[in-house]
Image (cartoon, rainbow, N blue to C red; front, side, top):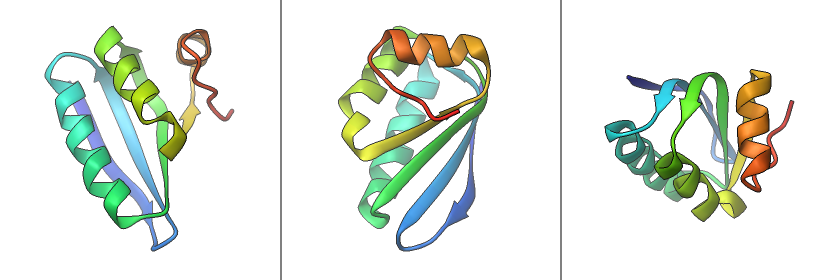
Length: 91
């Protein structure tokens, strides 16, 4: 299950807190949120500190949008997973 909430929002930057598993139907939900928020804010940060796993479709979504996103990863596993796939998360 995937939960997405707005942690903070301004004209300049939106921070979305992502929790759970970025997989299956959750990838489509995340994609809709990305499209919506990228139209409204100049910067979008995804806070992955509550993410347990990301499947191949989730990685593909992040890679397609990587120039428009900042990523914050919590666990060493998620940081390594993102890094191995060419995504550089903040600590």
